[in-house]
Image (tube, rainbow, N blue to C red; front, side, top):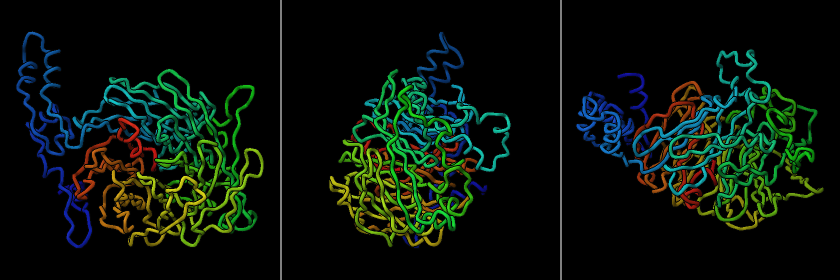
Length: 556
């Protein structure tokens, strides 16, 4: 048995002592000549998951001779290819992070429909980070998506013996990263439609999240502590900024031990950013405004308060790297990683209304936001318990969860049904029995289509494989665990028919990668499909706003 087969055989879903094993790829379909032909006509996904064989006789005969061998053979391949249909008729969109682009896969046939690499457009260090797709009635005919790229220096944190900096590829502006690309698929190929950072002057590199009505989106960046809200453009139109905000920390003890700067409390100050009147642009492109030289890696907030992250503005750091949207109300929540709190904005007024705190030992009630001047607000935190990271609203808008990390690995659970976020309240705390010590840690989350289950990726230190925790949202208890899923498991996505959950893993950009699949309701492992690149995010392109709620809209 090979090392890969041993790894695959160890992966299991456990809810007790009797744990079923994932079917190994070799157990499903032995790759002989017949299966290779099937791969050519049904796609590699069909071979891996065991699709029916296609009738390829017509294809072979036309390849070996005939009146017009080229066009008929191509038509025959399409006509005779048996569509897998096991995973549903969906388009699977993933960014390649250090690969510098994104790709769309047909989950029915296994084909890569199209791909794009931002290097080809003059970006000398594109780190294709997070993405979100707008709804399209027929994604096979066309759709648009937003893809952020991280600051260029983040390429240096993976231990790669690169000379990219010495070769001058991280400067000037085209190598500094923090581009926001709007890309269109026209049914045949992907086209770069707009660099939103260039259009608006706002360059951000982390989570991209679309409004529930699909009229706009937010992009965040925890290196700059800036969150911006954008009005959607289509085709050759130009994106407009609705509003943009910066978050600063003013610690009560800025001159003592570095960790005291945060843990002994202080104030969060929120500023509305303004355009330069001369240019009509914001002054936030490239590395402009960076507090850190590179990102806080997941669960790496301790690197900031132990002095291991360089940068010009470390002490003012809040870690504002995601913004998610309530599925029912026009409310958006910005997570501040350094404190495990969420600041709730009303999108009708574009003002912050309330702050909620996730860690145990902090207030369960909403914290007041005080407006101290036009475009400036403050939030007082008497003390800080731990950092946090990813979060999300349930699809019915009844609850919200936020991870607590480093010093307290758990998740705060909030009642968020009220239109007024000042009435939101933390009603409980979820903690899996395996979350002991600083790692493993809860990471990205998503929900089943009916909201009865929460799926949480559980991050382990490199090179260990991640797990996936399945949580019953009625009792807020673990009902199943998938162990050893893959190195650096990231975001997950549920197929819109509620049959499958797809979880992507990136291998910390240097190790294994792929997509692990299990059934949503019965929680049975299905297997893997390949993904080529250090994928850090994933979405199934939604076909309407109803499906968008379950895409990159309410969770990260």
